[in-house]
Image 1 (cartoon, rainbow, N blue to C red):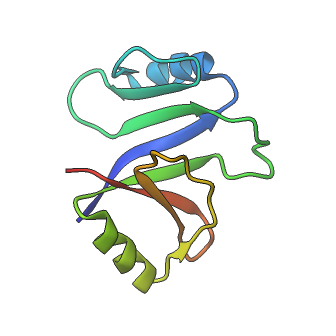
Image 2 (cartoon, helix red, strand yellow):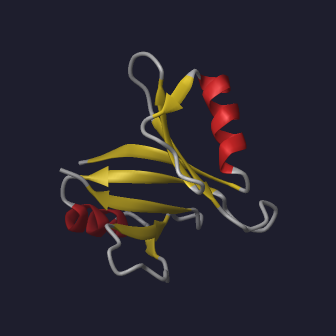
Image 3 (cartoon, rainbow, N blue to C red):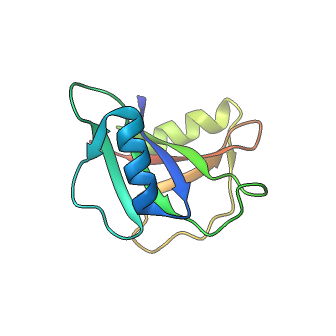
Length: 116
């Protein structure tokens, strides 16, 4: 089963984005943010978490937002997504990567992450 784990928002200024999105959505950092990464969660109640990460790409030419999908069985879900039209993406993964990058039929990328 898949569920949206995070909406990932790539920005050029992480502290400014944290300030803006926390005020806009009544969110707070889930833990102490770093200079290039933060997880935001609702201040009260339940809601979707938002990941803020630094990026240097131009928003006019590069996709800067994507979904992180959490899977209880990553391999099975990746195969299922491929069978319904997703495509593998040529990606440079770090050695410890816990995610697989795919693209939807329109070319929008998203990550599938193994979560228990």
